Amino acid sequence: MFGFLPLASGSKGNCLFVGSKSTRVLIDAGISCTTILQRLQEASIDPKTIQAILVTHEHSDHINGLPLLAHKLNIPVLANAETAKGIYAAFGERPKFKIFTTGETFQFGDLHVHPFSVPHDTLDPVAFTIQTEGIKLGICADLGHATSLIRKQLENCDYLYLEANHEPSMVHASSRPAMLKQRILGKTGHLSNAQCAELLISIFHSGLKHVHLAHLSSECNTQETAIKVVTEALRVNQLNVELTIAFQDKSSKAIHFN
Image (cartoon, one colour):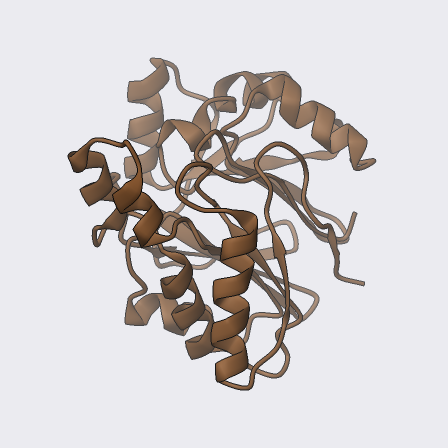
């Protein structure tokens, strides 16, 4: 598959597939190895063709299936040094790491990958832009607010995977502990639907083809609410782009680059 496919998105686990004409990688492996392999096969992607796993940060919903999957497929794990330390601390074992430097573009196969910093409560969390064949994909979730760096890096993307985690009123009304509510709503937590819309509007351009709304909270958001809030904000600004949800319990809309 020459394209992009979210295999799982949310607090119960995250995993994304990106494929070019000659390179196939996963981003994060936060669901079980068995489920990842199953969803790849359902999408007619041979797991044996996956060449690496890129990791955004070391929270469990991004690395739960990582050690077994990397071992089973005998592939390297690409992460920055701090995230690699966090993975080792979590599992007590070292996959075959290839270390990248946050803020520096690197090439893996024919993918040009740029990892950039996001404000989240982990050691050195990153988002990615990935470019191949003149196509630019932006993958940006798990961030408490949109910095000027983030806006700059996400300029001119053809496709976006963008966090719309929660509706603040639903967070306040939930039964979650006060400290957790504060974390979610804080500067190093997660983007709300309105914050997602604001970021999207600030980087919108006529070449943007599709946006996955990602990492939706199962308790403090709904698919309908996320779509409604973002669509309405776009409409007010006389903007329009295809929006779909990145699902937790199944693969999402596949994006074919060709």
